Length: 284
Image 1: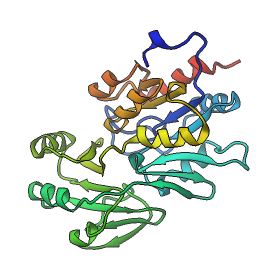
Image 2: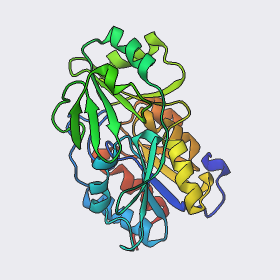
Image 3: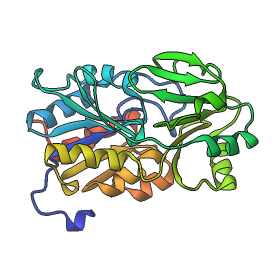
């Protein structure tokens, strides 16, 4: 929804926030790929104002449950403490309530053929399959800290023998541009895919995105898409930014992400989330 069609006096009933590159300093255009897992006081205060005003704050991320619950704790969510926070994980393949973690929805797909095809081009890639609430099954260990939870080593054939919610391909020796070109060259069909801030490729079921996960959460909360403010910085945020009543890209986001948004805020290192939230939930 463009600003021109937003009703006078509009204010979001639900705020959907990406994590890496949005709440945490990392991602596109940031000098280091290392994630600084802290929320600045300015951003935390802005989130607090949104919650105090009655808005639902929902994290919508490519992370799995293990990488999300501590972020909810960091933001003091849910509030009140006896409530439950609803969250979109794994780029929409999983939604869950917290605390404790209760998986609400999952979507799976057969990844065997597409993984085989991609490995013909990047035979040394690391492959991971998410085990919800447990960790990952991997063909080899990923760089320290990139994925979390319990790790179980398996062959690639074993990893994709059954339908999965998500597959990650990672090549520490390649670049983000290499994976963009690979996706274009191979022509991925019948699935959704997202290229991360490095040589990282997320494969998801067709039709599944942060937007579809948010739609499921919004249905539970009785909130329409037109009342959602979504903020993100990655290619995996594009559908969400287009779906939401107001979609805002972080200032360091790639061009295609900024073009999909209604507006662009400051980069993550300049507290862009706080700037956007202050439009709707100003400090008193």
